[in-house]
Each structure stands twice: as C-alpha cells, then as structure tokens.
Image (cartoon, rainbow, N blue to C red; front, side, top):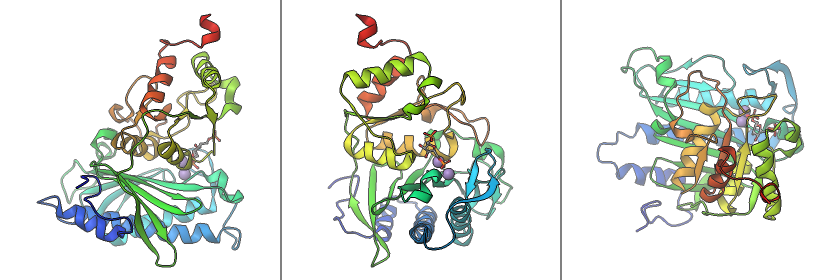
Amino acid sequence: MDKNNLGLPIGTTLDRFITRKQDDFPYATGELSQLLRDIALASKIVNREVNKSGLLDITGGIGGKNVQGEEQQKLDVIANIRFIRALKNGGQTCAVVSEEDEEIVHLNPESRYIVAIDPLDGSSNIDVNVSIGTIFSIYRRLSPIGQPVEHSDILQKGKEQIAAGYVLYGSSTMLVYTTGNGVNGFTLEPSLGEFVLSHAGMKSPKDGSIYSINEGSWNQFDQPIRNYIEHCKEEDYTARYIGSLVADFHRNLLKGGVYLYPATSRAVNGKLRLIYECNALAFIAEQAGGKASDGQTRILDLTPTKFHQRTPFIIGSENLVNEAEGFVKGKSKVNSEAS
Ligand code: AHG
Ligand code: MN
Ligand code: MN
C-alpha cells in the first residue's frame, strides 16, 4: 500500500480521504480533520465567487490598500471574509493570520490550531481570467488552550507546520495538501461539488527544464541572479511565468522546474511573504521531494520576526534549486564568464 495515499483509489472524495487519514493517527481527535474540511468548504465557496468574476461586479480594485501597501482587489477581500467565516464557524481555529489583515484575527480560544493564509494569491490575474490561488498553513498553538493567542504562536518556524496546502483556481480547481506524510491533490468535480483524489502521492521531479522568474525585473536583480538566468538560457531551459505563485509552483511541481522571486533593488527582502506564502509551499515541496530556500537557508528553518515578513524565495525541483543556490552563494558562474 502506498503510504502517501493509503491505497485509496483515484476518485476517492476528499472527505473520505481525510477520515481515513485520521484513522491512521491513534490519538487523533478529529479536530484537524474538521479544520481541513472547513478550508475545503471555504475554497468551494471562493471558487464559486471566482467563477462569477466578470459576470458580477466583483473584479477590480476596491480602492483600498492592504497592510502591505498593495492594492486590494474585491476578490481578495471576499476570499478573506469567506475563509475566516468558515474557520470561525468550524470552531477548530483559535486564530487566523492573513495577508489581508494587519493583526491576528482571534477566533475560538478553546481551539488548538492557528491558520496562516493568503486567501487570494495572484490578484493581478483576477481581472484577466488567469489562474489564481489560495495558500494556507496550519500550526499547533504554543500558548495554553483557553488563553489569548500570542505573537509567539504565530511566529513559529515553517518546520513546525502540521499541515499546509493550496487551492488552484485554474482550468480546473484543485486542492493540494500535506499533513507531513506525502502530498495529495484533489480536483473539484463541479457537478458533484466534491473534491476527488486525482493526484495521489505527488512527487517533484528531481530535475527539470523550466525556470520561472519575472525577468522584467532584470535591472533590479543582482549579478548572481542575472548569472543564473543566463545559465538557464545556455542550458536551453524553458521560461514560464504566470505571475500567480500557486500556479507557477503547481506547474513546476508536476513538470519539474524552479521558481525564483529573489531580492531586488526595489524589494530588498524579496516580495513574497514567509508566513502566508513561502512556508506552506516549502513544506509541500519538501514533502514531494523538492526543495525551498532563500538562497542561503532552508525556508522551513527561517525564524519569522514579524507577521508580514518577506523573503527571497527559490523553490522547486531539488537539483534546480541546488543549482540556483550555487549561483546565489557564489559557487557557480555562468559559462560565458568562466571561459
Ligand atoms: P498576491 O496576489 O497574494 O499579492 O501575490 C502575488 C505574488 C505571487 O502570486 C506572484 O508570484 C508574484 O506576486 C508576482 O509578482 P511580480 O508581478 O512582481 O512578478
Ligand atoms: Mn500571494
Ligand atoms: Mn494574496
């Protein structure tokens, strides 16, 4: 039996899958299972809203900015509300930290789980009908149950995650998640309204030939990153960049490739957020046999010091991440320079 998917056949519903996984843990109380179901429910609701975009007045900006100074799209706000409401109603979450909220959103103090979420990833792609996503991480609180959640509960290293996942609103809608025992992907069957197992035991190819980076920022990149991009071209890699992290990551996970959002002269710590985006995908990447780094350090070993902290990010197939890291650390040079 495959330990990743418990031998459950393709087509198994997410609900049944979660229940079977829970049976695997002798002392499991079912709370995490319920929390995962709450997230799946919210993502179905958000999927419904996403699919209406263009029909109703839900695309475009709301004229406000989020805590990171970025323009909020209407769907960013809608998705944030939907996820938080589902987590509140589900009752298994004591606190949520969201890319869209400045401070901790306190929910049920009697619960043991913390959720970190990027409710809508790839907002610039909403209005143009291109894939977008949701990213989530689940942690166990450190403070005692019943007490107010503290900052230290939120500022845990990524390696402390007990579950993480993403939802991709793409040509089909998928939910991919891990509880630290492999990665499984579920596709939404729209007529049933159910996620069904479609990608059992997902594995990141060790190698690949796709590189994903916003090359429009070339003038802002430092020399090691430029050298790595030149190397990718010399190796005849294929460039693919959607501008939705979830979609870029998912493609590279299936096909083999590397995604980079490095530090730039404008974004000196990179753009992506450690707690809402990078940690979850790093956990999934590692669980699938891939790798994630800030160029120097494993992402899951970084200690967050603030909620909305950003980090340079390199993620994907192990050999490609190693290769890119080699350039960042100055151990590799592009051939044309070396010759
Ligand atoms: P978000 O929509 O949650 O703010 O995230 C956008 C992120 C990420 O999805 C994407 O990979 C990246 O921004 C694209 O940034 P550039 O436009 O600078 O390439
Ligand atoms: Mn994002
Ligand atoms: Mn977002």
